[in-house]
Image (cartoon, helix red, strand yellow):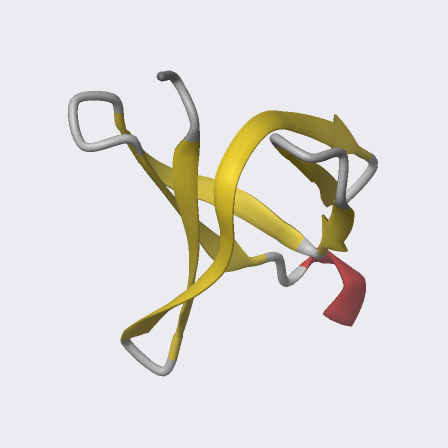
Length: 67
């Protein structure tokens, strides 16, 4: 399977925000995350790291909205 676990870094801690993620699509300063079952979530973040062998995506909060 090609699904990934998506984590958001906050205060130097990784919190899992989605399991079985099959799509990450940029939408302005946000990312649209879609899981295997079609559930969607928008996150104001940018991609920090993608670990393909571990099926892991790490995001960090975007500061663009705070300028």
